[in-house]
Length: 362
Length: 267
Figure 1 (cartoon, each protein chain N blue to C red):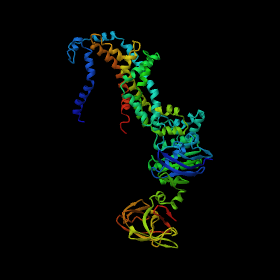
Figure 2: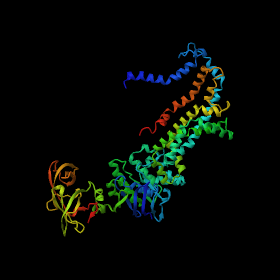
Figure 3: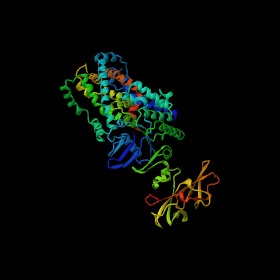
């Protein structure tokens, strides 16, 4: 069993607290992604699990062992670093086998394990090369190989794909997903790229300012975000947020008006139990949820500032009255040009409302 | 730069830096009377200075002594400085005060350490021995070595050592197998600079080396100063000979020396 359990884990540098009492359970074989903006504490949290950072209070359990004060090696974890951290003066073979050799594993056994890992990662042809003679993707595979050979209970990945170009990133993302399927190990992966998080994770942990904002499956977070931060962070292009005022509360949902768009009314399916008329709220609509068929929702008219044609879809960037911008996705229609006035519809069941503190109104 | 300007400008710069050596070479060919004229070039070529210089002092012995104490001294400096610098820089041992304290010791005039060191070595029976001088030079150059090595250690990505830690590699094995091989250019340049500093050292050598068996080149050169006159011509010959090893070292290891002195200046 290699589940990871964080109980009220805190970390501070001097008087500055960077991790504020985090509780989290990562189940055995689960692929968990820590996601959040720069400085949210995701890498610090990963390094605390690795044992590279001390934990000021709380406890970290791996399996049934309390590893809070254990050295990294005793935790039986492997880590893949953002910079790969390959030893530049050693060959691929030595890089992968160094940890085993240094721990006194029999050289024949080291060779067998290294060869096995190299074969699974298609690295056999590069074993005598040094890292400088490898491409970015190959180096990344060596870093993963070095993690595999030790057969750890938990794999830790610290933004492993951020140094790769876009194409290679997609390729390596799929390789990591395959690796997880094959090894069935517990994996914890840190990224600031929400696409990586959505595609790889069984469970996403969204962090901000050293606190967990929400934990859930990728689709849970997408469909049912707890707050404005998660709603904005998950999904690309990000959700549109429009200042709104509650204008009416009916049995089938709340109606709001948009001051920045000439008080246009927008019907939502949000129940009115926790709002009152006149309350200032924020309306959230994802770009892909706008429709162009009459009768599918509340109509709004936008003046197209810039359009981005992506082939199958195009994005309309429109300015609202208060200088903010909304993004509308249009499928199978390339006719909209810059400067066009476009009528689009907001389906009530695809809207979100957030209160002044950014909490979701359900 | 304009090529027409480049050549004369570089010739001037070269002349500026090589003038003391050229002047010394000229003095080595002057007789005692010629030297007092103050002319740059000798009026009469006086070759006798060369056999006289090598005949009057045991230059080969001084060179050997210098080589022994300077090279082992530099080695001792490195043995202490490499792990110490790594630990101080990496683990912030002593925060800011320890690095400042180490460098501060180098700012003090060396003569303040002379008498305590002399009595310390005398009590240990190490005055007038190679070992005594090696110990002094090994410790004396530690601040310089720390200063030079610290910029190399800072440039070493910490993730390499962290990767080793996660892999369960101990501190000393990491130091031996990861840190030292990657610091090698820095270690080499630091070693050479410490060696040159020890080779040129005069003050401690003049007190600690009391006989020909231990006296180093700078002491040998000072012996040309007689009771009544200074034998400038012979002294110039010996100085030229003493410069050769240092120059050879500097030329061969130029790349590393420059790296050692410039690392950490820019990004």
